[in-house]
Image 1 (cartoon, protein in one colour):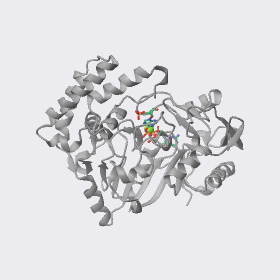
Image 2 (cartoon, protein in one colour):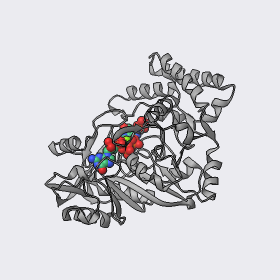
Image 3 (tube, helix red, strand yellow):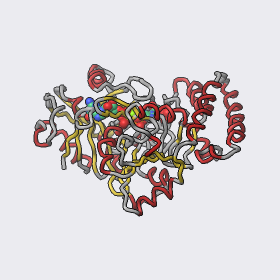
Image 4 (cartoon, rainbow, N blue to C red):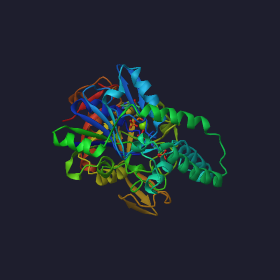
Length: 421
Ligand code: GDP
Ligand code: IMO
Ligand code: MG
């Protein structure tokens, strides 16, 4: 049996914290897409850690963590992350498995990401510059190197061949940064990776499922960044939605049971692209300040705005969301009034559908307004104790989406979560 946990907005919904909270109920935590563009923040015994490549179940000894075939893997980041989790007393070697089909991010992929962004000028995607786009391009272009290849004695030859191709592309961009240091680190990390448990991810996970083990598939990024269904071209290069679990882990759709969608009680986006409910005023600034909205991977300030139910409804549809976890609800504690976007005004008409060319249309969000709860909710642990205006806010969202919020997160710490069930 497989449950999925993924982001419903533009990423950074708090997936890491929630996976860490749910992990004790599962035997395997598996990342199925994305790479080190992800930054998943966890609090372990009061100390903060941000994970980029390792699944967020790593702090639970009884769970196995799998980096699935659909992920793109930066060996250098992974190696550094092993040291980071080791400082928390966890030996990643014991419980982490890597699929041999997982594609590798090469130093030249990072260079190509940078060169491509620079060449786009004002139209840049605002990528994390981790080499994600170029690595997935080499996968679909049938050129990439995979984790299994690093065990091959011809790995360096294969690498040099691909590097030459990349060099010609970099030359055409006029990119001539020296990447020799990155390459040195890369080959050190490749050696390190040989000591890890490299497995056939598909047989590995399906056998566990057959044996009755429970899997939690951990999404990275968010549904509105999905390469097919997000705000193209301002998206990432993988399928972030629940369908990506099947292609990313090699499991069949009927194995999936719960699809747990995570949303903030408001909305953020980092990088370029459409964001209809973005606030360019003091309220947006207040959300960023109280919510500490700065990127976990790049440190960039996140753009902030009100919750967008049109986009959330779309995300629930394409994912088949069965329950919602609402995070960062405490960030709204001090607000006198809250707004919720319920339709888009486009060329004089109101609509409740996300248009395909969202990045080209002027969208005027229509809002319903709610009274704020103006109560500190961070110490509340029982649903019954939540302030009435907050329950009204959430009830409205439940009704609009036709899916219920089953957990409310009210702070970054592990125990700051309230079950609604
Ligand atoms: P992810 O990429 O979805 O895992 O999310 P990030 O880690 O990038 O960003 C979420 C941020 O919000 C992190 O700094 C978390 O520690 C923090 N966070 C998560 N849940 C809550 C919550 O309920 N309240 C508050 N105040 N912070 C939260
Ligand atoms: P987590 O898992 C928020 C955004 C980038 C950029 C676009 C493309 O922490 O939620 P990429 O590097 O993937 O080519 O960048 O996607 N982006 C994220 N935004 N959270 C993330 O991951 C993101 N991963 C990528 O900012 O706009
Ligand atoms: Mg993040």
